[in-house]
Image (cartoon, rainbow, N blue to C red; front, side, top):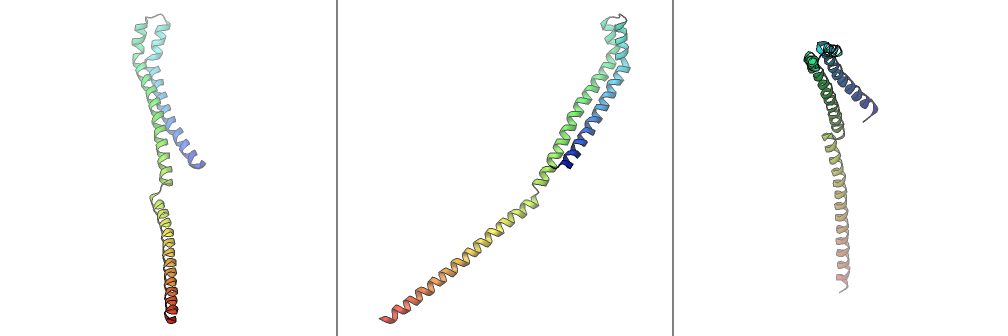
Length: 143
């Protein structure tokens, strides 16, 4: 694969993975705003851990969802880009029309060689028959 295509696929991957990171990061930020910050503040002020977790639970759920969106989105971006790049390369490398053309070209060359060999063999057989006929004629006159 040439450098231009590689760069194009790399940029495409960065854009997709960046989008996943932005969405995931926004969800984590929303989780902090929804409850993690309040839960931490309660814990810092001496509240019981269970009370702080109860306050932070909605925010924690949203933050965990954000991390999952980022992780799954990054992997999905890689798989999508890698698969598309490989498919493009394979389509280019193994173009069925190109393969057919190359096969037909080789077959045409071989057929030409065989036809040439057959005509050369016929010519030699014909020459040998003429020589045999000439020898028979010469030996037949001497009797």
